[in-house]
Image (cartoon, rainbow, N blue to C red; front, top):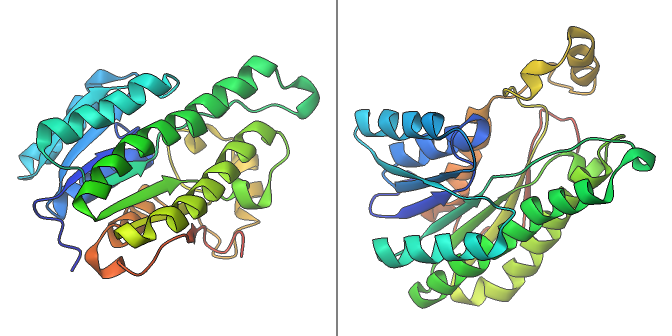
Length: 248
């Protein structure tokens, strides 16, 4: 099951955390993975080397998702060079947390330009290729806060909610071309970012998770592997909540 042999997958923000787990998982399933990063070239190359050592195929490209034109061109160039693009996993994103009265306009615009603008630009290029092939899979990495909100994350929550809306709209637009578009909304996942939390903050978050534990990047990657597979060909426009029951 979930055989991706011969397929090309592009994972934005694939050098660490959830993106890295997704890239490694898709490669294990047989996909040729192209992962992007904006900083940390060494980390990205380590992911590529690890995939190659395990017998997979991968490459890394630098991409600043804040640059919509560059985002669209990068995806288009990958599809042209490799002859196809079957899977796009839009994982890259940033968060600048602040209460509304302290939220700077420039920070709001930066979050929206990366999380929404860059993602839409990548998707536009990907879908052009997928339409010609009459098949494709697009996955947006949203967040639990995109559905339930969170104090101090107005801008971030807005960007993640926007991805859900974009995903549902695109699912309707391209279902007839056999292109599925779905979103995954992670809850509390153990990454470098959450690793910086204090014990008090960690316990406060876990108190809202019925399963009583954080998830792992592998949990998210497993959901992606299913949604991009042939076995999920009749699933589109959905939000898959991988959150331990944090939001239902």
